[in-house]
Length: 292
Length: 266
Image 1 (cartoon, rainbow over the protein chains, first blue to last red):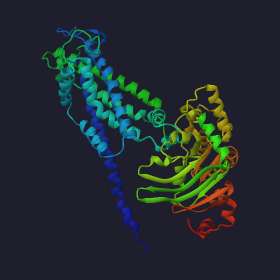
Image 2: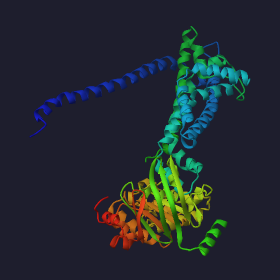
Image 3: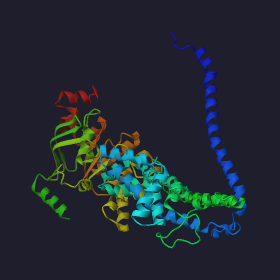
Image 4: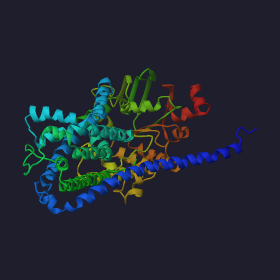
């Protein structure tokens, strides 16, 4: 006796296939929605900012006269900020991830630390701004300097880097570690020569996300007291400076049409900087990308 | 340097041929008593096979011989394993030193995602050998020793992941030989390989035993019969029988050994 009635199976075929098509279309729509919004945004910014976006714009200091205004100080300031944030957050973040994954014993304390790191990722950026103001600007008397802002931003993006690096380190197959230990390697040699090279693609993915966030954040820097208008460059990490989002924020808050267009051009510069950073990271990542 | 000297003096004094002497070894995974009062001696330049059904503790035992077992959390070990006159379970015995003398080949081929050359020199490099000429010689000697030189000599700088499974395993054997160990532990080295690759590894073992003492865990009884000098039969964490391979397979003294090798269980 057959337990399956094949005519019913055939009848059931059509709704199953339609559902399949329905969900496929649904997910495609979801993807297209995001793309559409991004497209509108880019179109608006480029159409508005393009007339002002030229070499002069990159080289000029900010000015009251929109025709002569440029992003030079803000652009250089953003690069200074990245020069502090990238090493500080990567060294601290990857170091923490290595300790938690490779050295720390799995006990209640590590679980507690782990939960708090994840929680930190959800703390609003303005709170980090207040922390930076209290600790770096005032207690360490660093003022609204590159260093104070860089350290604050590093703290802000640290949780993202730690969690991403942990994921990457955890996903390195244990067979590779065993091969290394089996040849008499110490833990550190194994981490340096086997674990990190295999984990670098994942770590950099986290790093890209984190730096992209740091380069676009404005709120904590407002709290730190970064100037909206600055006509000179920082000479060291202890000097006052400003960054692209602050400059853009300044321009958008002005009523004149021209400054709105300048803001759009400023956003274009920010996007290009972001794209450059990502390209570098992707290139490094591809160099190390390996399959297991 | 002094280490090798003490080794030699120990060899000179005692019964020289003994590599490993296991005394009353007990091991627990948490509450699970995985190895029970193991007594086992391993003799120089012999192939010692360990057979037994899944979960009998044979892999656990071989991993204790180079203390890889410590990587598993919640393991407790008592008793002693004397290697060349020193108890390796003594915490003062540096585990890195032990593993430079006792190499290991794993169940699944596990080359590093690096070039063939870099795989072989990994061990010597971590032990501080930087001279390119010496490293080149080590690479050729090890790859020849593992019977894979002719297959890879023209592509030493290509990624090891491009090799077949059997070639990868022989590369892992070469990588292990590159640190010039005294003993090679093999944990089911052919279980992931096809019959032809298995045959190649088995032939290789006959060559290797001239220079190394080999302890091999295997699921395959024919393999144990073909390649080993001595065989230990493990069951439920105990050594049921340990003697000459010929005797185990032709005239076992324990009923359970006989049942196992004749395929009545396991």
